[in-house]
Amino acid sequence: MSDKVPTGAMGGQVEYWNSDAGNKWVANQERLDRQLGILTDRLFEHTDIQVGERIIDIGCGTGATILRSAPATGTGGTVLGLDISHPMLDLARKRSKEQGGMAHLELRIADAQNETFDPGGYDLIMSRFGVMFFDDPVAAFANLLSALRPGGRLCFVCWGPLANNPWFNIPRTAAIQYLGTPAPAPPRAAGPMAFAETDYVMDILTGAGYADIRIETETCDLVGAATVKETANISLNTGPAYRLLKSQNASPEIVASIEADIETAFAPYLQSDAVKVPAELHFVHAKKV
Image (tube, rainbow, N blue to C red; front, side, top):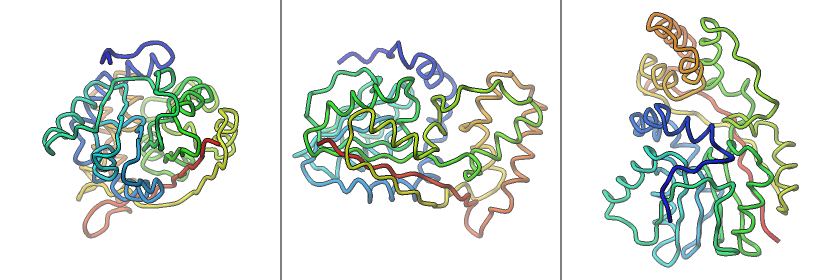
């Protein structure tokens, strides 16, 4: 399978995640894995992976999820990890090799919206924040449905509303204070918060042909760094504020001011061992009949 950067439906996302954005996630991999650790544990509780299952992981990034799903399904199963970011998937490959390599794990540069899959060849399609970026989500999920066997299941986690997720809202608000409000995106445009409305997610999956759709909304803490300053720096370099900084070519002075405001806003979340920022998440389940 070719590892060329995919083009077409997700062209804008491909360009973004193969630029500094992807490199910054690579640079912050350890800190981000720690930050997302609690919700990743919950995702694996929801997926309930069984030994021998054949799994697709959409948007597997730097590898945190595939490095758990591959051992969980064992050598009798398979894991196909997909991502559109070369730098992130390169790190996932490196991490896999450092764990001794897994013959039943394949990592592939691909756009899941139009990738060709083995029809009915998989038991589970899962994702941690990797399915909110499709230009045509109904078509994308219909394509994924074709990969599931009858009775196969879909399970993913996505973000709830912006107002209930300070990890996104605080940096975005700080950046807007200095850079101005960005041009409004189309309603429910592809991006981290695209699936915040559960009714919209239900409509997408129903339109794509899924059954037994269930969405469980939960809260948990995102575990940041030990200091507010480091936590603010991570959020500035990997979240919505970074998109604004990149698009506006902000000066170092403005960046410093934004980061200082983020530090102030995150300060109330500092606990004895780390900054812990509350998050609202949707865990989505569906099946193929």
